[in-house]
Image (cartoon, rainbow, N blue to C red; front, side):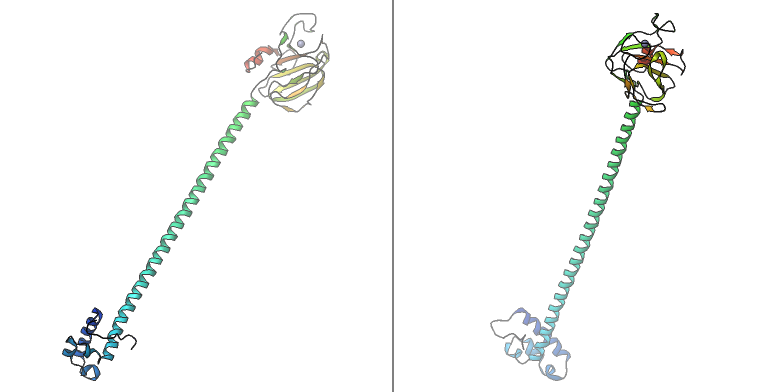
Length: 267
Ligand SMILES: [Zn+2]
């Protein structure tokens, strides 16, 4: 018997003691056969020699022990399987949690980016709106050389209907604000001139220009170049004649300096 342990008086493992007890139990219940032939007291007695006759019994006993061992092994395997299942479950839960956290972080980053983009767009729109409502001087860094309503034989109306900005011939002339070109061409005493209907309903006029850079119907923005200064028409020398009017017609002129100043231009 492979599982039969060599017996010896001086080596009685505790397992064998248990086995003996089991065999005693079996013997007590059995009335026939090999096992029945064995006297329980003989086994109960501390006699190693008696065990030598109990090959079959011992096999059963060892079998029990083996079953116990298998049970224990099965239990251990079940425990290992349970532990593995628990570990897998925990791993899946952690993975799911990590995925959720990732999704949440991505959604938050997306929302933040959207918010920032919208704020940027709002700021850009606001800046553009502000720019379009800004007024500038028609000649950068210049000054008024002849004031509004100055009297003299020079003007057909008897007085100056606008102001003259000092400007050498060929200086860039700018639209003072946002509007639409309603006149671009020869204007008699005004020479080459441009009239712009401003977005606020007023009109601005630019005269004596050497060349024009815009056409009727064209929309212009503050500071946009509309031509070059000159001395065309009824002019004593190169400069820009600038007028502001409440209407399209001649005679509706207003103080151009006050007009520009009311729009924040430092002149
Ligand atoms: Zn003038």
